[in-house]
Image (cartoon, protein in one colour):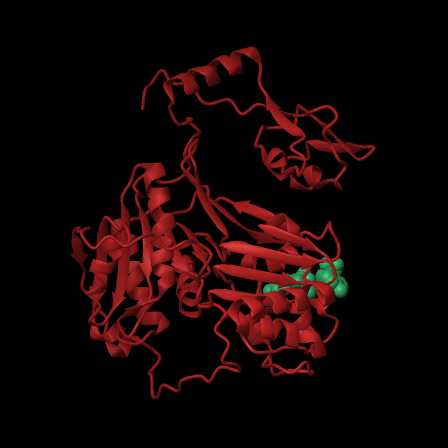
Length: 440
Ligand SMILES: Cc1cc2nc3c(=O)[nH]c(=O)nc-3n(C[C@H](O)[C@H](O)[C@H](O)COP(=O)(O)OP(=O)(O)OC[C@H]3O[C@@H](n4cnc5c(N)ncnc54)[C@H](O)[C@@H]3O)c2cc1C
């Protein structure tokens, strides 16, 4: 690091005239320095308290706040942008931690697809940081997964292959993960927000005394300070929060399946495999697996793997009208989804719920019928390839994410779509227009 480089100035917050929409004191609530006072719904910044952290700038929904700099500060900023150098914000983290790691979750030697989705976003993060992307694989007889990891973008693989890891047990996997992370010190660790991933990520973060942002819907690098920006819904989904782990390492985040796109596979890619040995025995593990009983799903619906999902919301008015949703789904070779209101009302079982507390889906086609588009629903389906929304309220938030919006009554629009679809497929009218209740 050059000795002559000056610290990047942070500036002070200022309101841009005419842009504030008096959203309800979000900027004031976000300020950690009590530097915002409200006057007639608009913020007044106390410059002696503001330290230019930029939290109010980020949270403002109308982009009405900016950071301003003195002429001297502006000069330094210009130098930075001329050199195209990352800003020199004092790094509070130990710089020995380097590279981006992705946990390859597997069961009986078969990788969970979320691992490859994470390698896709991990590749982007590693490239932005100018570091390597590594996969770490834990299990018994799982060496073959290294080839897949390289194909999906890993530059190197860390592997612990040990019979003690044949079935997932927290203690055994924790010890294996800790061994690798403590020895090789990755700056970022990404894991799938699956049942296994949630358990292991929490245990690892606790032992490593670091932060963990669960269920991220967005991951990026703040190039100014090399921090991982971890975005996820917060406060019951009412806002999107971007969380930083400034000091502790590694920065840990989990992401649900189907949130990130799976990268293309390149079978030609190769790389080094670094194998470590685990020195624990059965006596060190407090749990024994006596028997494995496969869980029976409460429904055969496979939302996560479906290419087409037709979803109904409270606008369907009752379970007796879901025959339309079911019929359209069947005609299109898809499955039935729904909002949480529908599950709460007992119209469909939980297995059909899409959203923050339901399934995250990414079909080729998602048709939302009578669904308002609450943020908790959107986070579960907004990455679908093509979204059609039918709602009689033209201001419904579902239209913000829809590629095609139909403002209309589902009871007019759906039968018309069904008829057209059936005609174009030459399909007979098979389903009776009767109540289906809990049998979608
Ligand atoms: C912690 C938390 C987690 C949550 N998790 C989830 C989750 O995983 N998934 C989820 O979906 N929700 C979740 N929710 C609930 C969420 O906030 C909403 O309440 C829910 O998504 C609303 O469902 P809805 O759109 O079906 O109903 P509503 O919000 O009541 O919307 C009904 C829509 O139907 C339209 N409509 C009415 N009649 C017609 C008609 N005849 N034709 C066309 N349109 C019509 C209306 O204009 C309206 O937009 C969660 C909430 C919390 C607090």
